Length: 444
Image (cartoon, rainbow, N blue to C red; front, top):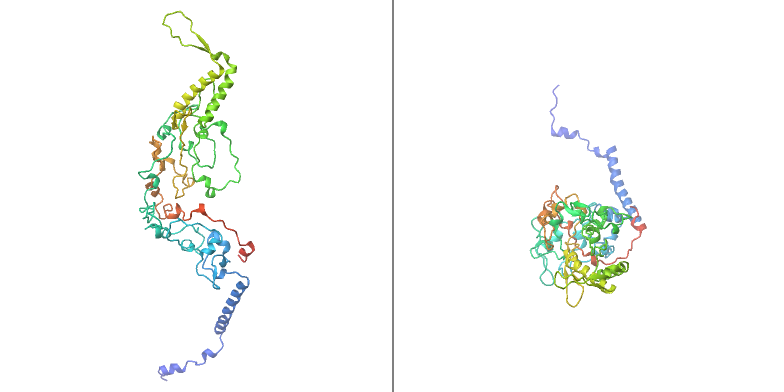
């Protein structure tokens, strides 16, 4: 029997028009889910609302320093007219740390959230994009007179001027006469024979403290380390400790003043030294009265057999003479070897110029020697090998820094925040805390 030809009409007659009305497990599941999911979502939101936990509305993970406030949106997003603002307000930030402005004459002050964006994970909020700085410093203007700072800085590598301390009109203001090249020579005369100095024999950060090779042993006391901080948060590791005579110079540069005494004068003001000399000679002469007898100069003609006259000095006169001799040696040679002394006819003692040793060269930037300790000192301070003048500024130039801080995955950080801070923290305002632990830790 011939098979009937299938047509569209024949195929349509095979379709069950009531198919979707018949019960089916998948259709039941779809119905249950379409009802249950919204109900569950509403119950979930209601549960967080009753618990006063705002975490569900968060735009993402918060930084490590603010992670404890994840469930407290109102800590940063201050409610305005009954609703939370989309961005954190400065009022919310100031409630914990009322940071001062960058400069009194700035004409534009960005909001806190414009530079410190939250809900981006756990990086430090201080890690800001360069555009936060260059929006002003690429074309800097102020409300007052012309700025003293460079007005066009776009980036560190290729867009940053040379450091101010190394510009042509800058010199070291220190008055201590120091020749680095001589001190770095081989076979220098040391306290116990030839020595070879290294940079850290004079220049170290305040911590960790260790015994100095050429310091005065009498003044050195091994430190007792209490509550030691890790290097990353210990500010005393950032900058070099001041150079002092007792720690760095005393062993090689003694202050002897007379062959009668082994000790030297104290490293102090001329007034203190003068008093010390008077006291030491006054204590000495009562036990050595024979030294009061002084031979008078023979002014007769030669070859005359006349015995030399002998004069006897008073103790006061003898002390005055010995003090004058010692001071002549100290002022004209020993002290003058390092210090600038000024003599005046109206005063018997000289005036010593202030040392003016600069402790921090970068006044508008931060630097940490401890994080650079893997490098040899002369890699950055190469000028010390040949410097013979105190006025030489031995800081590394910007080209030295660019060798490492140039950006990219295989280079050190080179964005503005690495060396500069926006806020002048010396003028930070005090803040009185308002949060409680119970509220901050709820449902965390």
